[in-house]
Length: 143
Image 1 (cartoon, helix red, strand yellow):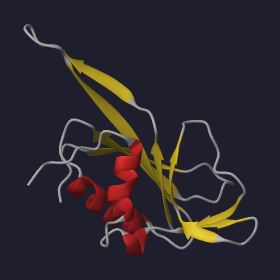
Image 2 (cartoon, helix red, strand yellow; image 1 turned 180 degrees about the vertical axis):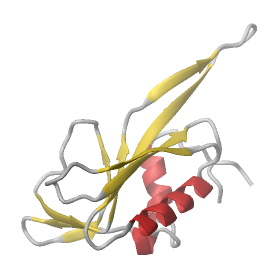
Image 3 (cartoon, rainbow, N blue to C red; image 1 turned 90 degrees about the vertical axis):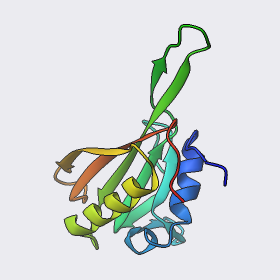
Image 4 (tube, rainbow, N blue to C red; image 1 turned 45 degrees about the vertical axis):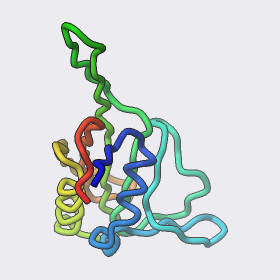
């Protein structure tokens, strides 16, 4: 069986969107036209999700760029690793325990990933707490 690697933000999204264990924790976006979608997106840092009226549950935001680490070799081309940031944000309808459970599921799907910077969200925006997961592009996805 061939190994798959999370080499793009879209690849990470596809794995998470198809994960039946994660699905119960993923919240919901409600847009201005009242349409709803699972609260999971790929965004460029600094961009906003357009026409969003509200978010409930756990929101997952995958940045489409990340820090890049170079692993030089003496006799061959160096290997690059992209560290993709994935943010989990706890909105109304979810708890810190839900955030922890969703984080654990994601960490188990991506070898070498880590969770960091669990912080309370700013007052007034409606979010409770968020954390940041780093997923490395050079380590395989666990089936």
